[in-house]
Image 1 (tube, rainbow, N blue to C red):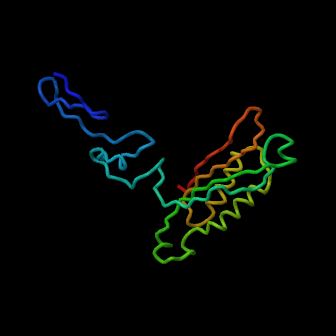
Image 2: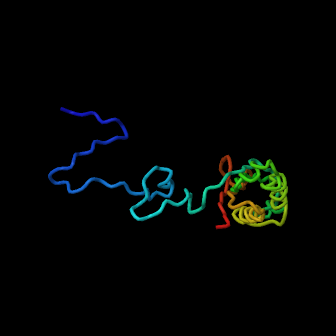
Length: 177
């Protein structure tokens, strides 16, 4: 007699001859899913820490997408002479609860000011690599008091590549931790 097992499930053999102990749930070791989120109990003798991603405490997010500015970044003379449009996406990690509780802009990050500062970095001193540009943008964002972490994605849609492509991006994450 065959038993059909629904996809994603498996049968568990009862304890008996040849089986000394029941399986024990262990925290997930995968870097993509933390054990708290997966609802896996903590290992025996350990305390449950706040949920994290890559070791950084989860925080609220403020996103700015599609900031555009002309810059003169790149390794080729034509890029430095003619320039090109760069597009920046940001995700700022901060605790928005104090601002929300008091409805007070002074207790959060002013994303209008952040946007102007990011555009100034892109329009500013040229660098060879968009990795360097992304790092400079991240450091400018982390200067804001409440920002605990930032994800920066720099798009270079007009990169000098000889084959058809849609976009070139570099994405970095930086934090105070």
